[in-house]
Image 1 (cartoon, rainbow, N blue to C red):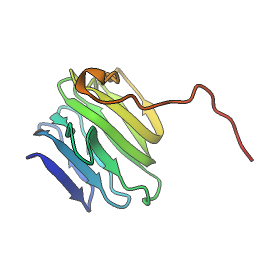
Image 2: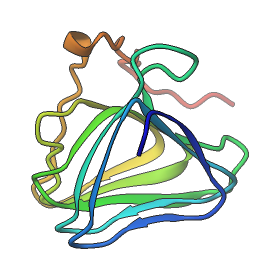
Image 3: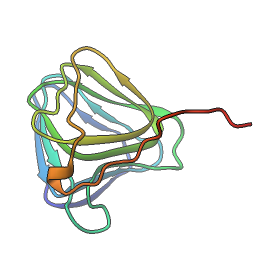
Length: 140
């Protein structure tokens, strides 16, 4: 991918064996479209460091219906930037590690399975921390 904002009006599926790279990229998933990254794909992508979508790698449509995006599999992939899917469950499965990237996730639900892990301290990349609450409460 060349630097820029890409608007996808369909699902993004990256199968095993695929090699994908892009720097300065924001992928906007319109509607209820999802990302499916399968095991043994090598994906090296980073968000832009300036402009409107600075720090945002994947941006899910806020008006979409509840669905799921999945990042599965390989320890050789590197995703640097925020993954923003407010209406989706984001699944990290298998051996996904994000290598030397830095990923911040905003989602309806996040599921971790297997040996998945990510680096979320992105200060060295000029990204600000996403504030989190220390408690949760039910308001009626």
